[in-house]
Length: 381
Image (tube, rainbow, N blue to C red; front, side, top):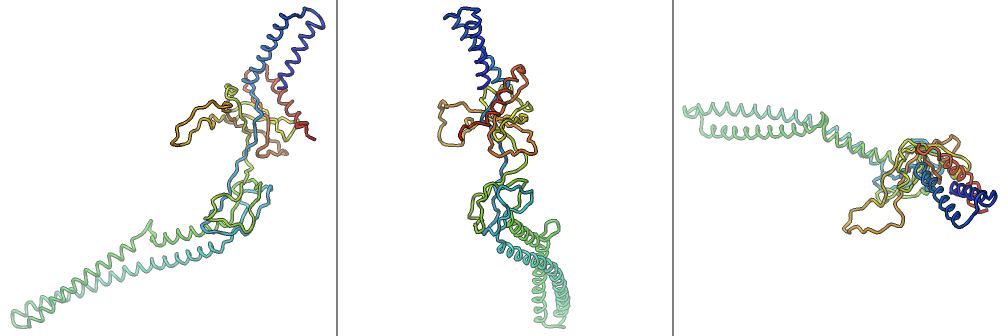
């Protein structure tokens, strides 16, 4: 640490001046032990204050949200056009990929025809109810006539005015007409039930056909993929001829969003004792040596992988980890308009908790030394 080296150098010069230059005191083994003891503890005071009040992290990276581009198609479909160039900013709603839509356009036409047929069937159901109602009226009229004749012959036969076989014939006719009335009523009830098969006043056959049409139109629309947000495709691997659909499980590209990038910095757990959201932050991004960006603490991610156990039949084993789990801190940065903020970009981050303000200048010097050192680090030529 540059600050620690500076403090050490100052103390060495102080001891040299007292004992060897001005010779105010005679240097011996006792004074050597005392000087070392005082210097070590003096250095620890600065180190402890900086670690707790102005924690510093070299494990910090720019994070941008990515959206996996996954085609939503039901059939194996050929990618016909790639409409986006890699590493080029696009706006939300811009077309990215277009797939062959032949099969899906045909499905839309088929669903449209089925909807028309369903609408015609609904009209036929109305006519069926009318016809069934008329059939009931005819059957009742026939039954009424048969009953009149039956009653007439029942009076004539005892008086000798008609033969018994005539009465028997009308008895059979009444029975047949009664059966016809029941059949007509059953047909009417069946037709009425079919007509009453509705949801919110719309025939269910029409609704089903409409749903099939909307589903077919949905997949037809998805033969063109549009940008979900402002951003860009970084690694363009999709090419015309690529087959996607129900036989492909993964994404064909990753879309890096433009909005709301942040820095995720990890710290030792004990260094976050006084860190809270809203505190001031300084960021030294490796991409811009000699510059310091400002920001603030957005959130502290109080969770690590060491605290997660997945469902398993095995009992957990407790072994001493090589390194304690570090805690991540999410940091928002004030990005100048002419600056690039690349996903994965490395940075050094200092958090100023507002406590121990007398030590802040040391951390600010430390952060700026790191930033300017990026002009020559690494030293490869």
